[in-house]
Length: 301
Image 1: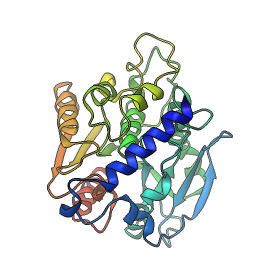
Image 2 (image 1 turned 45 degrees about the vertical axis):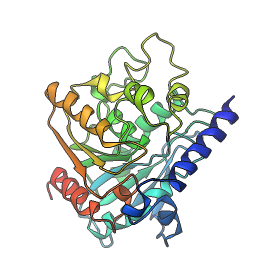
Image 3 (image 1 turned 90 degrees about the horizontal axis):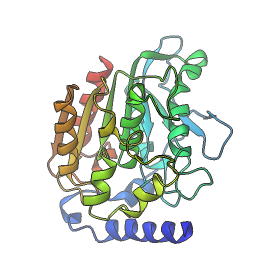
């Protein structure tokens, strides 16, 4: 069953990219990102003992003893082990590093890994985010200037991680979760239930969403897994979408932003013209200047 789900989801994902109706309107697709030369991270660091429990740390040159701001980066890929992970973010990581911003580019067990899904995916992301406190003991990172940023399924996990202060009656709750200055989702799947029911099917939904929460023991599986269920999270949020995105169309970002604003959270919603799904993680695309401006604003740069 799991292998069949992985295979079908990967085929859907590849087909969506290969048959993108907006391809002529945009400069790149996901394969262009992978085809480019990529610089290596400065260190690969385990945050746990389990499968896929590690992150890659990018540090600005000459940081020395001066603490630098940090972006905690979470890659997407439909929560699927069969789809590329951290390497999709490498272009952004190098760009941020060159601008004096450190990056903790984390990965996590996904569907297809032994502990992927509920609760393993969520527990691992929480561990990785909280691990920045340990990183700061060795590396010059300013924990007072941090932003969580995730793309697609990683946008879901970034929002969820930022909202952990609202978890109470959940096995996923911890006493002192690390909470950043703000969180940015790039084509984020910010409402699991809505995406499951109304998504275009490009991420294998509804099956992938069902698989992600399949291990939930309760009768309300979205209550502690979907960011919209944890509002207000009392963290500033920036919700960015591409107007031409066929995988997570912009109406999902708009709908979530309206819900978060109604709950009283500070939210900025941006829909970028002439951008699709992958322009949001391409530092050579015009979209990046807008995104970078929001990163620097939240960091107080």
